[in-house]
Amino acid sequence: MRRVRYDRPGGPLFLEETPVPEPGPGELLVRVEAIGVTLPVVRKVTEAAEPIELGGEIAGEVVAVGAGVTRWAPGDRVTGLCFGHGYADLALLQDAMASPVPDAASAVDAVALVRSGLVALGALDAARPEPGESALVTAAASGVGHLAVQLARIRGAARVVGAVSDPAKAAFVRALGADEVVGYEDGSWGGPADYALDAVGGELLTPALAALAPGGRLVAYSSGGGTIQAYDLLVGAKSVIGFQMARIARGRPELYERWRQELWRLFAEGALRPAVHAEFALADAGKAHQVIETRANLGKVVLIP
Image 1 (cartoon, one colour):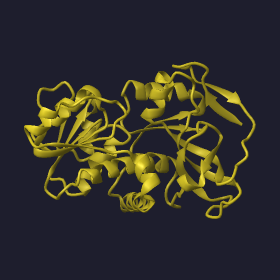
Image 2 (cartoon, one colour; image 1 turned 90 degrees about the vertical axis):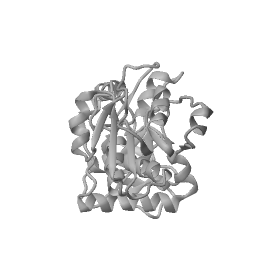
Image 3 (cartoon, helix red, strand yellow; image 1 turned 45 degrees about the horizontal axis):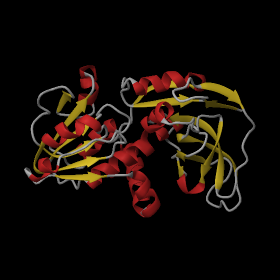
Image 4 (cartoon, rainbow, N blue to C red; image 1 turned 120 degrees about the vertical axis):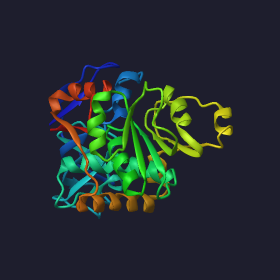
């Protein structure tokens, strides 16, 4: 089978032939039909001191199961987060990370919706939104952000502002339901928001906090780091909430599952529309990463083995 790897930090990515892995206890062997490219994996390729296994969101058909697996059988369609080699024709997926793909949905739908949607919905819940409030979403055209814009509206936001890195993304974000789209370099971010969902971090934390109304809540779920001054919190009685999906998946599986079911329900109703920027062949994984690195994507970037 084929899989993607690289030999040194920063790449390049290339295909190699490798034996088909055997599923161990609690594992599924999945014939991969779609792979969601994520910013954390792209960052690790360029920043990690040693090459990593390229994992991420996968969806496909179960072809074999390991010892102790009772929920799944060959032929089942599943999606989940793969911690090993996921950029491959076949990949190992932990039983606990797998969830079913509905008959009416494709593998591409699954990788565009589930993991990114869980992060978006989890960050939104962490903000404790109330109907009629206003929302600010950074990285509003990203794989997570474009779903967060829609979910904020679904959860009752009276006004949604999307912040983007490039003004060319404005039409896309407005089509998702945003009332206003602002650029990171703009002097004003659309007036006071009751809560903000920040996927960028770094230097954008300060303007995101400044865009909040008194008493506003900033949910930080980026791996981009950043620093906030305590005085900026005190002067407006604002708060910052950190959100990490792995903590929910490990510690509150019932909530994780409830969010997952909500996402598929909204998808089936047509209320939530995951967007795919482009589909790349497995051999073009480097090009897919470049789209994410340059922040050129409108929605999800997907690899198709």
